Every structure is written in structure tokens, then in C-alpha cells.
Length: 107
Image 1: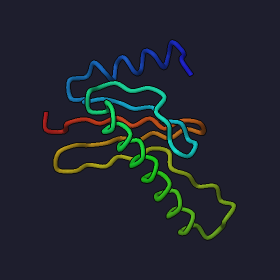
Image 2: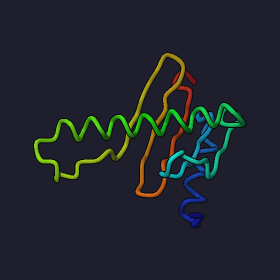
Image 3: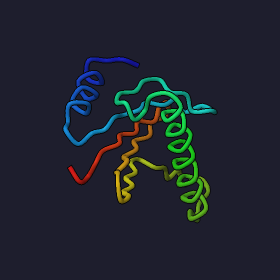
């Protein structure tokens, strides 16, 4: 999974002052944590985020499929951004992985 381009991107993400952390997850069930950065994703809290991010993507994808008139249309989630009062989470799914970045939009 590790390439120089990926390492550079993750390094840039980690160094941004508003980023609280990132988490890279496998697409299997359960969504396993492959890599993480930031105290917010440590321990049990990280596992909770991993489960939540996986459920979010699955639910949004399922909803897209329900809306599609053609079941073979193949529409899929490319990027998802969710903003709450305290945080913003950005999720970028891939065929094999999910990348979720959590940041503080107030900073």
C-alpha cells in the first residue's frame, strides 16, 4: 500500500494545522485499520471511527443504488464530506481502502 506519492500525501495531511488525524481502512468486513495518525484515532476511539466510516459509506452507496433507475449504472461514492458543529470528516473511498480525514473547521 505504501508508495512515495501516498507517503507524501499523508505527510501533507498530517502537517496541516486543522487536521486532527487520518485513518486508512480496509474495505472488508469489519473495516480494519491499516494506518492512522492523530491521537483522536488511538485505541477504542479509532475502532469506533472505523466502524462509523464504514457504515456511512455503505449506507450512502446503498442509497445511491436505490435512487438509480438502472441497476447496472455503476454509480458510486467518490468523495464524501460531512460537517458537524465540532468537526468535518472527509472520506475518500477506493476499491480496496477508505481514507478518512478528520479536521477542525473552526481552526
